[in-house]
Image 1 (cartoon, helix red, strand yellow):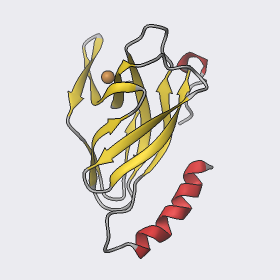
Image 2 (cartoon, protein in one colour):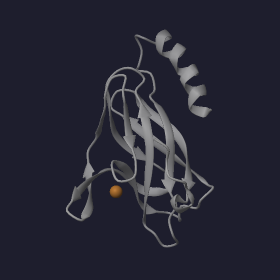
Image 3 (cartoon, helix red, strand yellow):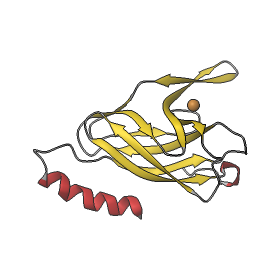
Image 4 (cartoon, protein in one colour):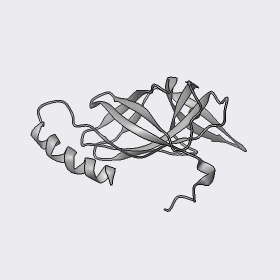
Length: 149
Ligand SMILES: [Cu+2]
């Protein structure tokens, strides 16, 4: 419901502000994996839907952690390894998914554990469209049913 509401609001704005700054992208399906006490990192997942023009996610911040990095996951034989990347490309009119086993945001040096049922403010910084703020729910992934396809 929230993402539909945002989509309806953002489209007229985009038309009216054609000559001004790029319209904000829409963030859906955002969640942060709950962490056990003492954990220093947490992963955040979300989908970014382009507001029109091509753009790049160049960073993120949150009051809940000292640093947020953009990570990709590389699969080697029998293992997965995370790598930091400087940015993620968002194709014009397209979307980019950050999901378990792939790209994600890494919250580093958590100030407190990620508790299921709470929300964490996340500020996504784009090269063209500026900043998009999202309130991201913390989810105990073990309690979630498998995602539908
Ligand atoms: Cu990571």
